[in-house]
Length: 374
Ligand SMILES: Cc1ncc(COP(=O)(O)O)c(C=O)c1O
Image (tube, rainbow, N blue to C red; front, side, top):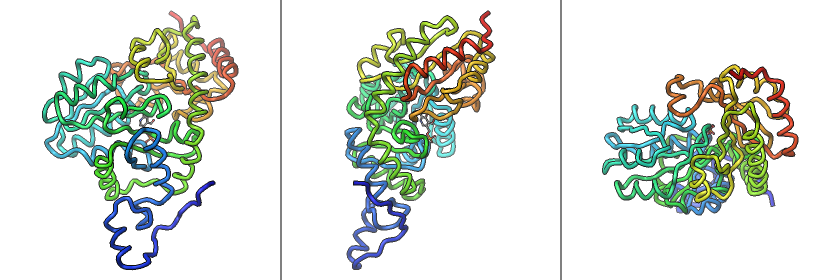
């Protein structure tokens, strides 16, 4: 039932023909450790099945998955369109990669579909989006961006679907070419493994696997084993995340100390129609803004107990982050504000605890915090 963990870095070939066969097969799981073991292949097969993909490639982190996709698909002189309102380190990585490899980069805001229409040209080779976006929960209409991408270029459309999980959103079925995840989050689900994964058709994944086999950002077999164990309860966990997060978002929306709540399945979300079309659940991520800016945000986050003050997300327990000072602090304030990240904004990863406990902790913190209301 539970597969053994394969720690071996080398494998004895039964004969010369088999040695040559494995050397020629980039998928081989018993050739050389850097190419991957049966544990990584098992994890990749699960993700491919969940995303409706032909193949998947696992990596040692979510950022490594982004990096491998960019290395595999872009050449000097190509053009790339990416969104600036996404996870800050993804944005920084994309800017660095494009600069280092002489790829022309157009950074757009994902909020307005016209930005894609204006940015994509016949030389565009990669279009990158993250939906829902970290931390602002801004959505990208996957079907529409796919249509525009295909009309105006032969670019590959890549979607970071980390916040949604394959349970709530399947970008390939909506026209994306590659879906990727920080598997560190919901896919692992237990806050005990850093990993990434991307999925798509065989041809694209072979290109990514080739880049991967040279660069070598591989998963450890034990990490792959933990991911296989974690992902088996993805559906159950995400159902509970969806249920809890909607209740918490509704509670926050009605709280007098809260200015604004961002959650895709709240009717007040300005892209709720997109969420209703492309997501089957709102996910576990809720972003909200308390009255009074930075001081209020920091004061609130200092007063929570059950909701742990931590930067990661997607685990079984609830965590809360202050993006302006914690996850997006590498960006200057003007950049943050351009991406919709305000000083009083908090990002909550609603866990699978009893929702009454999560709510009581937030209510207590909202009451105790020294919120500046003017
Ligand atoms: C949406 C999103 N994509 C990618 C990443 C990067 O993943 P990792 O930290 O596993 O490298 C993160 C990390 O927080 C993220 O939130």
